[in-house]
Image (cartoon, rainbow, N blue to C red; front, side, top):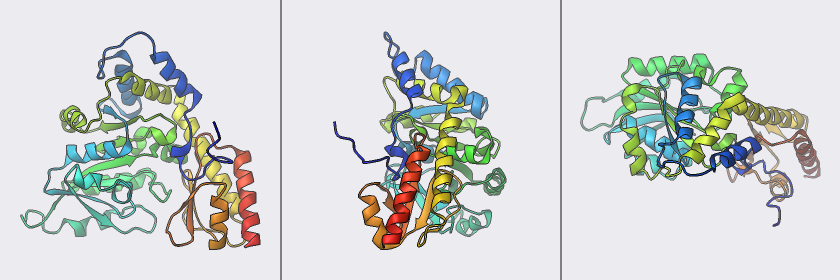
Length: 348
């Protein structure tokens, strides 16, 4: 079978394969028969793993995709006349095909942010008209960690946002597709960016840190958990062979595999950023705080580079691109890519 790329892709961490530890866990779960629909020992152990890393109140519900996790979280928190405040760049606003509004039936109210991060003072203007039947009632603030621009909320920033939202009767959801990368970047436990920061619901990302079609919605507020099983079933996200999703999360949490994988992705992004800082015509336009680098390139250099190393043009038809490193990106691959960027920019 031909290789899909000449070298590793820098387009997305979704392009990476599955770590051998996770594949081994799937194989180990593939023994004999097990009760379906989550009534198996692996799913019970995975739930306990979530409680060990996020706190005893955590109630996880395994699903297949991050979009499904976000939609489930919104459905659990909001009624159809309620709305969600999020950054304009939030994945649920830009990259989920309208699923949050079509399936969850709630309105997204977006806020422009230069770095993808909401501030507490940006919430209040959207709360006008609460109680008026002509207005959407805001119910939830959704934060993306790490953001779609690769930036990371600090623990203090999350705490301030949660406190501000709760004081105004709002719940807080964390789209944690790259939560592992954010925690690795800050050097803090996963619960520091979720439970301890006052978050009520988490879409916990597994795919971008190496899992195979395994994500989770985690209720951190007990009253949000009871309806989740029905929402998951309605959304077509209840896995009959749940043990294969659960086994992956067990592998991810045990021995802090998530941390090693995320650290490598982050370190490779930092290496890439450091390598291109001295290249003429290249400008890094966002702080490199997780596993993504956003840079401005000469337009003439973009297409030739993409022909060998897939990556996204972020503001097409502009000149800002996004490079994403993965759990399996190597220093050698980064260095070759940096050399190609330098050569192409010099040629352009």
